[in-house]
Image (tube, rainbow, N blue to C red):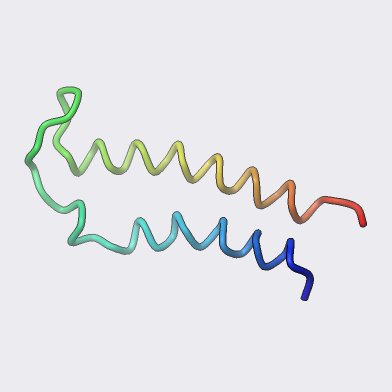
Length: 64
């Protein structure tokens, strides 16, 4: 297995693990930017997930 595919798997796994760690973000306080922490965490990871998936797609699509 090539190293770049391994990196792509890591970039896809990071957001997955961040969403599965529910006890970390399952709370109402603190309020960040007017949103409860639960919603703020979800929105931030939605943005990070898109970035990580884009990087993984680039790594997979690279030509040797």
